[in-house]
Image 1 (cartoon, rainbow, N blue to C red):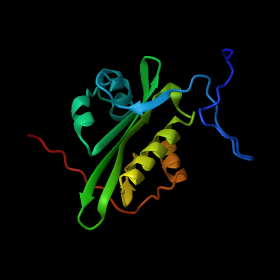
Image 2: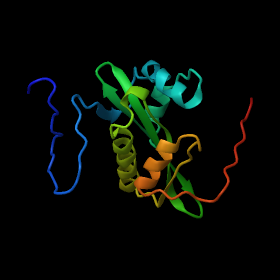
Image 3: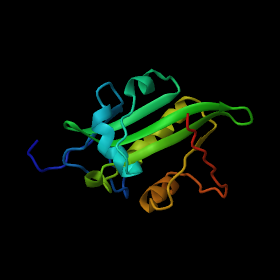
Length: 164
């Protein structure tokens, strides 16, 4: 295919009236693997303003955690995680955490693709609900979550940082 032309996603089927974003070189969505931790530092800095080095081996080994990344060449440009847990009054519940897309790759549909895939995985694992929290300053992220079916709740979130 000549360079500069959009490529059609694998399995693409056009539907009348539906606009599909096209990418010249769409990043690949895949699961986290060993060797990704250092490549994720710039993404986590967007979320936390800190340089965070994750323990990817522990996350990969945990059957209750699914971490997905968008890979663009040698770089990781997106991350999101799904954590499964049981709650006595609600059953199997999923939680989406740390969804972030690199600044140069935002507004291209990657966040939507990532969140929709995490929702699919939660359904495959029989979750009865999915929870997530979002910083009120992340207006674009909140609009994305609402557009895929999340409903903003009126409950307050409480946090305690434990120091050992």
